[in-house]
View 1: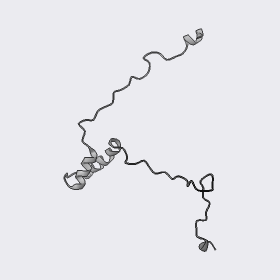
View 2: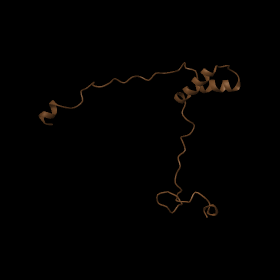
View 3: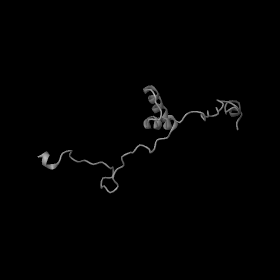
View 4: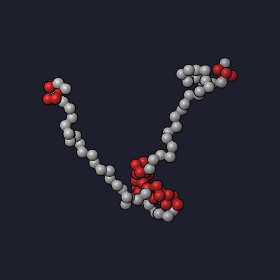
Length: 94
């Protein structure tokens, strides 16, 4: 290394933010189980509690399946997967 490189650069040991340990939520209630109990009539909850449980599910449970994306038909002759069809039937177009 050149002398200027030694003087001006590089990362210092111990620089930057320290990693934060993840927060464990062992005692937190299961929101999905709570909503199932509300639906079955086992628990009587206020509308605000139901809204809060629905909002919390996004952060505590993964979605069942990823969002479906349209994929072009592989047997199509069009290399770009586009279809240029008239939106109406042929009888309606005339």
